[in-house]
Image (cartoon, rainbow, N blue to C red; front, top):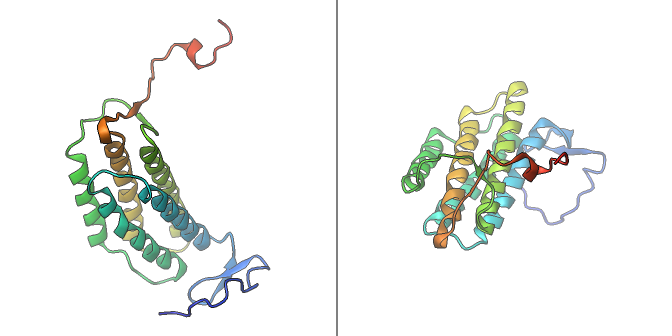
Length: 191
């Protein structure tokens, strides 16, 4: 294990740089930092979701993902390091299929909401999509582990399905997009 922080501030970042795990100093807006920083945001959103009352199995499914996101952040912070494998992606797919099996087929787009926990899950999903975009941006300039990027794609799919499951807990419902609203209902001032 690497060095433990005994002091939280180091002043080494006051010049707008930060250190990657291999000791390389990079700007704080470097693609590596953007990628692992967005994973940190995603992990925080999952922490917020895990603080909510959740249906059976959801907490158990999400908790290991927080650890894996930390591992994935290590990949983006330490060039050449690999932590996420095809087995991680397969496990997400299996979990997704399990939760999706009990849901009705989609006939409409779903809006974030339904209840607080479902809305938080949708927020985590959108941060996950951004993390995937940042990973692709990084990958184009500094090739990354393809399984890591697949992992983020499957995780966003899983979070979408879990948001649907969570919205339906305790007899709740999903918020469906009403695409055939009357024009004056969405702010048409000409009427």
